[in-house]
Length: 68
Image 1: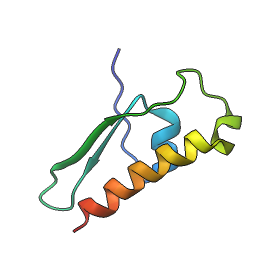
Image 2: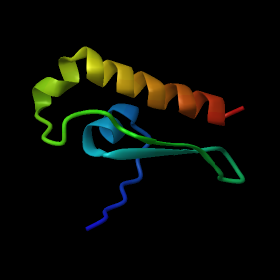
Image 3: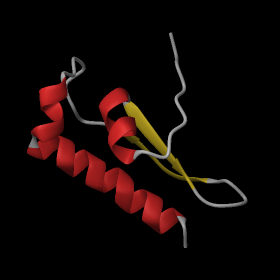
């Protein structure tokens, strides 16, 4: 099954996704399409880990670069 979530929250995207796709401003184009490298079973405690912070930062950086 495939589910697509659309969000403006990088932390929400990282917490929920197996894969993050970042789009640019208009015209919307894919800037980054990457696998989120976190364990498949995610509990709230994961948000306090270095791995979660790293993944969130990578998605955020792609979002900032996509704005250019």
